[in-house]
Image 1 (cartoon, rainbow, N blue to C red):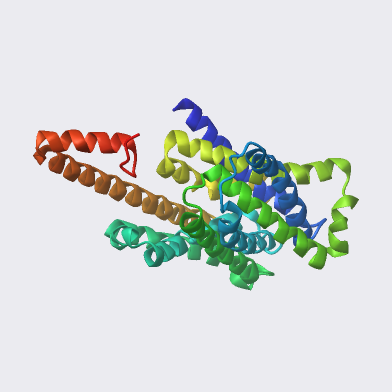
Image 2: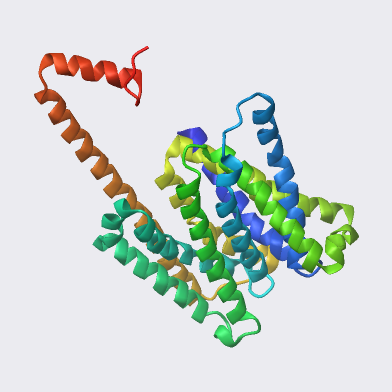
Length: 337
């Protein structure tokens, strides 16, 4: 438990400083260049995992084909995510991304019938409403409102990024089942990097060479942001899920807008207004409520299913019980060696 808490807090810290890294470079390199270098370097760090699987004869068949759709969605979302920092401050981006929860719920309702009972529940719908109201209030109460320079465009980018990340999460669940989280992300990161590098070469200033004009220390920070936010961040997140579960780990990560906003004050001199803090709290609270309702209803459904199976099991004749145990131990195909 203690290790899990440390790991999830490190994940939160890493994903809180990453927006500040991106914001830091908005005055020195363009967004295409930022994405190309960061995701290209992160993909290099993940590549050894895939190479090792290939060399050891443990290559998961079909993994690269399965990763195409999630990577395409992720690559698109990453573009909107990065470009939003060139228009609005990091805290606003982080709060705008809470819209991801609403898009995820809508997508899950369409793609996964088993999720519909959760999404229709009163607690979950209240959570969705809180996310919508809270996100909207955070945007509207920024100094100057949507009429401020770049505010409308930046908020639009952040919301589109949230929609993209929702689609990415749903596509991973749909396409990558059975491959494992680490292998899945390693494969997806290669395609995502390819997208970002090609776009950098085509659309970036001087084909991305502007990053080479940075001082050695600044270039090192650019690469460090890739390590912290992309390569190490996802490893730590998966480790926290293994130790604390999805609900707790994801719930802690929902605090990211607050940590980004708090770090922005001394590092970027960016300040949210009091109403923004209030509405932001509503948005994050709604997201946590959605996760909690989903977790609680899934646990209840699992307990009811196990109770039903146990009742059926007790009603079987003794010889049938013995046969069922043998089949279960043999595996899903029911064959005994």
